[in-house]
Length: 350
Image (tube, rainbow, N blue to C red):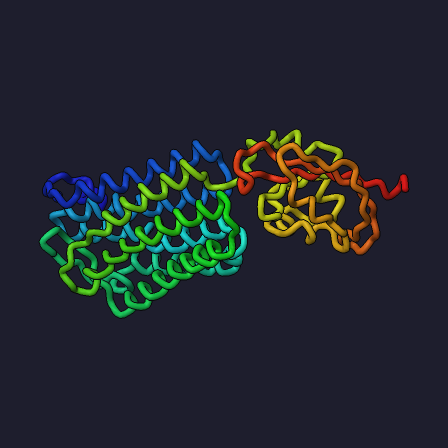
């Protein structure tokens, strides 16, 4: 089979190959540029994974369109479905990384990968998902059997669920860089979802698969969102990780909404929680019973709080006393500022 796939006589030049191949290269380039700009973080990696799955789909289908041999076209169709099902699960994973309040639970993300992995395996076997290849005016295209309708329903359901979480996040978020970023990403994904129109021909309807056009719109909108608002508010560039982790004082960084975005080792030891249990939660989740003054969340750029003493209960329920110092990062807009808290355990000295 490989010899047939590599044989140039089994291909015929077609104009239908160009737009999908160009769009596939463009979306892959976008993923790479995001990794360079945002550095290797969970959010940037999940976005790059999403662009990679889209690139697999578009690239493989480009060669499918120019295949003159049905078996060669079937090979490229199956290769494309190494990426197509995972577009939905990668979108779900990206939502779990970039959202603060409505991120999908880990078990749902894992379930989406499991279901889409089963669909990808089904496409690799004869008459499970792809039952035949049909020749349309633009080239060969896979035709689904009865399981195809179930796959498309689950695929679109995962996409809609992810978009709904973006919408709920947008409605809940206060005016901030994060809210503007979510709004642009929501528009980008809404445009990209129109690419699901490429599922129409798999049911025998001779509609030209123009899904590359909404995907190209997604590229432009997502690139704008990333370049203007970035993918995260607080990044490792805020301070060197090794310095933060070796500080003897507990360090917490909160965004403008009062949500914990960064903690160091000393903070985890002091409060008794892991990073996963603190990041994305309000400050009260770290220090139970602490009476944080309202002015703590209303600091101006020039304001600071020094050695504010307060008792709290750690995870084990032990009463501890800390002194708290606070200041804000020097951002022009109030909604973009981060609140930096440094806590010192003074229980023993008290």
